[in-house]
Length: 208
Image (cartoon, rainbow, N blue to C red):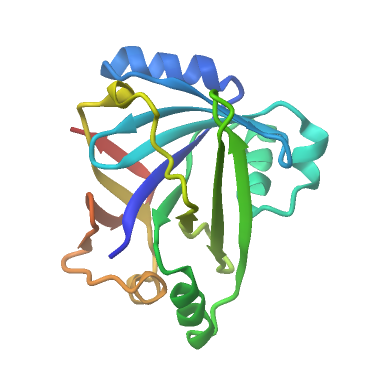
């Protein structure tokens, strides 16, 4: 079963945006790291239902503009247009090969798997791969599979005693959406491994 892995929030100043959110919701936020291949960096807030929020910004516009990563394309465009806020959602999977086969059988185009990595503050390497299903209009959530080291803070006290309890995603075609992610949907909602998902018209989430 898929799980919510993280919500991506575009921010010109990720540190400021994360700290503002943290004060408002009484949530601990921490510095993440730099993605040197993409020219981006992030701040994070971890939650006890095994998911997190990522505030991501750009420190090298030239590198970001040249990236072939669809998420970085999206981030670059949104920030260039002056837009900040939630822009993407990642579902966590542990069977990327099967997910790829499903998309191929559905004849749905995709980009990836794209490898990613960053050094954590202690110097250890975090690695992952991402798969981006594509559609003509709008943005589909991407799939992420982590490597040997999972994306959790080494100090477990930094995990907030709160949850991302529910999340809504834009889905104009319910059947197509559920086919892509192999979800069972009732009354426009699906139960993921760690939260409830609602098919709606915009990306939003609730902290519980």
